[in-house]
Image (cartoon, rainbow, N blue to C red; front, side, top):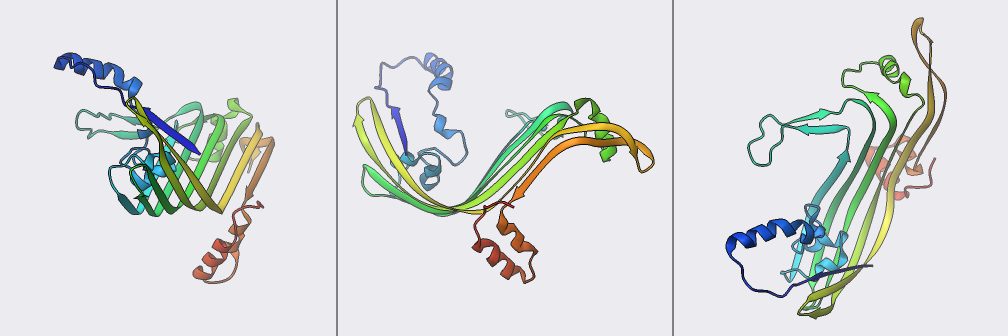
Length: 271
């Protein structure tokens, strides 16, 4: 259950225009709403989509009802790429997305959110309900210290660049699931100083698929590979697993039959 509250400060004495603007610029970072950090989540105008971030947000909405037939949102965070020559104040015709090169511990965090038939209905001035379905997925990737450059064209060259970083390690994980939900929220308290709303969401989830690969203690050792100087893996640990329903794609049958068999099974247990 999530609780959400905020203060409505009483209006004070008016100031001159320039002092008011100056104070706004100073204090906006301290009093800005933290619920608006994503494009369609959290705002009081997000309607039925805001419920996934804060169930209590569906009460303080200016519309009696809303319906979102279809929406997609993706969010990615990584230190493996950098955006150059981007300006928010002028035209950015020379903007480039470049790979970060050199020795570093690289990571990638990603999630995708697909929503279908999400709705919100205001029951009265103090309460509202919301409902919907969706498919969500997330991935994470992380490495130990590794040397990377975009001109690497062979495994032999990659090992030569990373001999000093031995032992190597990395992992990648991913999962997807479907869900349906129902939410109820209401206003608990209101006075001259603020409003307190509360909301609760009931989710029913079903796993679609998941997989992971993890490697560690990969030591590189100089040696002969196909008659040429190269590198060998002297030691290491490799673990992997995937949800059992992924095996259904390796069975005989039409695409429609395989898809039905795949969706019929839950994600885990792992193989």
